[in-house]
Image (cartoon, rainbow, N blue to C red; front, side):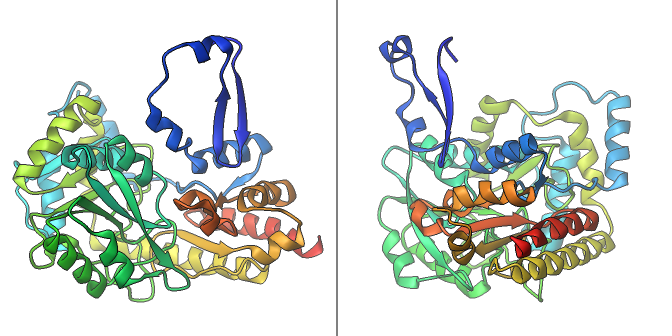
Length: 414
């Protein structure tokens, strides 16, 4: 930042007030004016500054599996400290292919169809940059994970939004069909979904697949919550639906399933032709993912089936506990079918505490209880759609959630 500039927070994010000197310089990329910094990570910083309890950003406060950590330490000691193969170590790509076949039913060649990336975040922008040409459009379901809109813009596409409607977060088939046209290059689906916890059904995915084939469109599937499912919900891989194997780019990572959000190891499974493009973009974005951690992820992907059962049971207990507390305190929560987030309708609480929008409510909640949430407007293209919603995460130890419960129950006496 140029000396003399000022920085301010607004309800939409973090902005600089430029100096006269800055205003006289050539303008920055105009696309950056269409989105803000991450509201989720901004709320984490506000929470930290207040000494609060962070139920905003979706990272566990418990550790990754012990065998996985030990494998990372061993890999470092064994000398895996230089560049790995750009698109992923062979052992990891083979492990990814084996797990994709076993759990998802996806058949893929580890040599020609898998790209290891620096997390699912880099995977998404690599996929979009590999697909998009000027004038293309990308369909995004809202509420959405906040990266999808900016990623579409940065890749050169125009995003078109289709709304998921509470309480079951269903979409209007007619609205979806109207969003597709000759310019549609891709549709982005996150299932289980952040922030709603929606799990797209086989019927819904089949409907989307039919439109993708009708309009010659790709589907980018963000599957990072695929093992976090509740109430008998089923994760369906789009690549296994008839006609979609070569049209689907499947994204995943170790962040959520293996509680290692800081490792930044993700991957993309796609057709050989698409993979060639993804690998080129990935190469010049990041060169490659951390070498010793790639070795360790092989161990994670080979964990026994019992690990996934224990993970689901842990999150089921946390889900029910936080839901009950939020319901008790008037947050009108929506019970998720997957992932580890709870969306709430805080219209009555906003009126009670005399706040005008979701962002001010989230700040007020930190002030009153020390508990951080995420303003719902950050998950919508039209902020007013989420202006009475906030999101909480429950990927925390029970001790943390019990502390959050005590803090939130302060609201009853206010």
